[in-house]
Image (cartoon, rainbow over all chains, first blue to last red):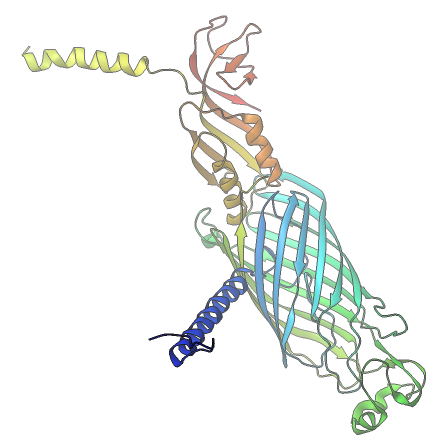
Amino acid sequence: MPTHREDGTNTAKGRWRLRLARLAIKIVLSVMISCVLVTSGRADGHSPVFSFSTATLGKGDASFETAMMWREGAVMFGPRVVYGVRPNLQLSFASPFHVTHGEHPTGRFTAMMPGVPEAEVLAGWRFYHATPGIGTRNEATLYFGGSATTQKLPRSDSPPLKREPAVYAALAAGRVARSYDIWAGVGYQRYGEWETGISDHQSNTLLSSLAVGWRPPFLNKGYPKPDLRLFWETTGEEVGLARLQRTPGGITPGHGHDAQSAVARPFLSTIIPPPFSGTSILRNSGGTAVFSGPSLLCTYKNFAFQGGILFSLFDQPNGYQPRENVRAALGFSYYILGRRK
Amino acid sequence: MNLRFSLRIPILVLTGFLMAAEPLHAEYLKIQLRVYGLDCGLCARGVAASVERLDGVKTVDVNIKTGLLEIELAPGNTFKMARLRKVIRENGFRSMEATVTAIGAFNASAKFEVTGSGEAYDVAQGPDKDRAPVQLTFKIQ
C-alpha cells in the first residue's frame, strides 16, 4: 500500500508512519532529556548539602549533579555541572528553576545553589591546601562568579521583578579527616541592574554556614565499599529588601502592570512609598533566618547520594511572607574521574 | 631412590633456572605509595581511576585508612614515579614515601637506576659497582 498519493499528500498509512516517527522522536528526546537530568546530579560534590565547602575536584574531573529542593510551598530543581580545571581551580554552572513557587524571601537555597531561578557560573579557587596527615586536609576556597535570573517570579504585591544579573563571592574553609569534617563559610550575592532605566532590584543575600561531619566507626569501611557520612548543618541568611521601579500612575515599565490591577491586589498598600515615579521598596521581601538540621552523604564508585533536612531555629521574614519551618534537599551526583588532558 | 623421585630434582632445578632467567625487561614491578589527604571513597576512586590510566599499571588498590596506594605493574612498562607523583598532585593530594620493587642496575654514581625509566635512587642495600640488572625492593622519599 503506497504511503504517498500522486499529489504528494500522505495516505492513511503514510500519516500513521509520520505519527509513529514523531512519537519515536519524542520518546528518544524524552529519554535523552531524562538521562541528562538524572545524570546531571547536584548534591554539592562530596560535602555537606546546604553548607559551604571547598573545591575538591581533581584536574580534568567533572561532576554532573542534580538536587530537588523543598521549601514550604515551593519546589526547586537544581542541575549543576562542575569541572576541575586544575586541582585548585574548578568551574561550575548551575541553573535551578522553580517547579512550584512560594513567596519566601529569595536568598540562596544552598551555598552553591541560588534560591531563585538563575543561571550561575562560579569559579572556585582553593587558595589554601595542606595535607598534614593520612586522610586529613585543611583547605580554604574563594568562590567568585556571576548569575542572571532566568525566570520572572510572580509576586502578590507587585509585578514580577525584572531579570537581573548578580555577582556572588564566598569564602569557605574546613578540615576534613577520616572520622570527622568541619566546614565554615560566608558568602554574599549582590544584584545589579540589567536593563537601563529599570532599577528593579532583587534582594541581596548574605549567607553563612557551619557544618560538622561525622563518620561513625562502623561506617568507616574504606574504599571501595560505600562511604557514608553524617553531617549537622547550620545556615544563617540575611536577605535584603527588593526594589521596584515605578512610574507615575503606578505603571512599571516593561511589566504590563496597570493601576487597576494594582488596586485589586490587597497587599499593594505594603509597598512604600505609594506608586509614583521612582523606586519603591518592597516591604514584603527579604528577612532573616537560621536553619539547622542533619544531612547525609553516601558515595559509592562514581556516584554520590545526598539528603538533608533543616529546621528553622529563627525565621523573621519581612511583611506578610510565609514563615518556613522546614527545608529539605535530595541530591544525586555522577562523577567523571581520572580523565586527564 | 626411584626414578620418579630422581626426576623431580632436575625438574625443580630447571624450573628455578627458568624463573631466574626470566627476561629482566620489566622495570617497576610493585609500588606502595603513601598518600596524604585521602579522606573518602570518592577521593580514593579518583586517585585509582587516574593511576589506572598510567602506562603499565595492572592493578591499583587504595587503602584510605592507611593512606597506602598499592600498584602492581605489568612487565615491559615505561612507568615513571615522577608521573605517578604528578597524578597524585593533580588529584589534590600529596605523595609521600614509597616502597618500590623494581629491576635495574647501579650506575656509575652508585645510584640504582630503574631500567628504562631514567629514574635513579640512592639505595643503601645492593651490590656496589655491580652493573648487572637486579631486582630490588627499596624505600624512597
